[in-house]
Image (tube, rainbow, N blue to C red; front, side, top):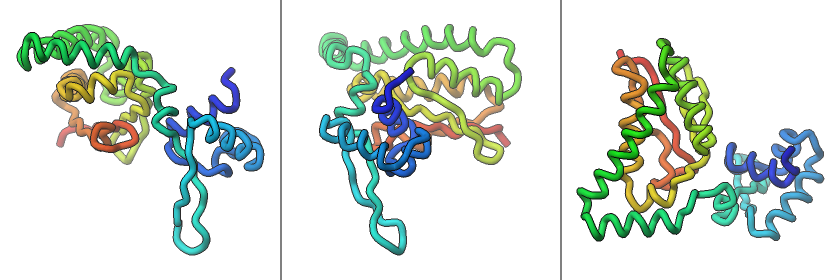
Length: 207
């Protein structure tokens, strides 16, 4: 069982900025109790507060993760990964780096094909894809928006690698399209490296 501070951090990671009242409701505790934990996390540098106006009345105080708070969720061997990508680019050029990305995509495709095997309906395939991504550390989940599915990834465990080489992101998007088939359209809507809080993908049936 996660401690209350850990649960607060996970809620902020998953849902974005929250007030003490919102967090109190989610944790079945008073806003005063939630605020006590928030101030402690703020002093530890894990979160920060900001005021947000919502129409008439005084601005409300919201809380969000700091960069240090995001790091807590992990970016597997970020420094080493970034250095290795730089070394590959320096020694073998962009062509060598492209081969590295393609090899990763090939390995992922084999794993994903096995997980999606026998799932004929788009809904089943999207849910299976989200389950794989969640197991890989992306904090992935699926929501419905009308006839569409929204694949949400609240965390990126390879963020440092993706920032150093956006070929990884292009490769993953291409892989999603391949795995979901010709009958599906996939479009990235939020993008972490473009200043988004997370990456999201809108998935629906082709016309």
